[in-house]
Amino acid sequence: MFHFTGQLDAYSEKQFLSYVTDVLKANASPTVLDLSKIDFLDSSGLGALVQLAKQCKDAKRSFVMVGNARVTQTVKLVRLEEFLHLVNDLQTAFTQLAA
Image (tube, rainbow, N blue to C red; front, side, top):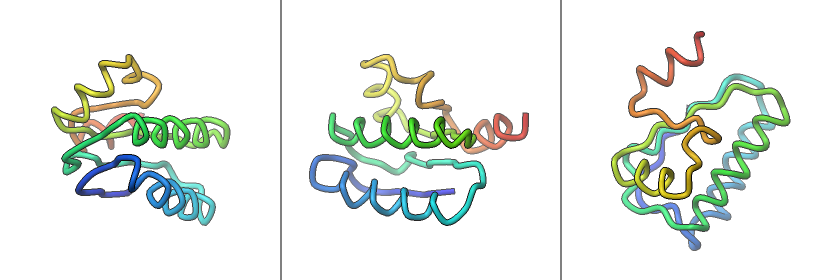
């Protein structure tokens, strides 16, 4: 499980993607991305999330993303909520992974 705060944008997406990819390579467990404390998400951040979702799909790894109102609005604007497995809270995320 990953918890992130602050902004996921053009300035942070490379570091974000590098960090998460390294951790994912080290283990094969299901992944929960908690973005409920993210203040800002731009197109670069969305691109990083899409890359991450693709990596998990290719590795047949379960992947769920938790967003707040701002993250959810941005993701729904580009109709990626299903692809990114976006849910509203951690409880829902864990329930989905257990199913």
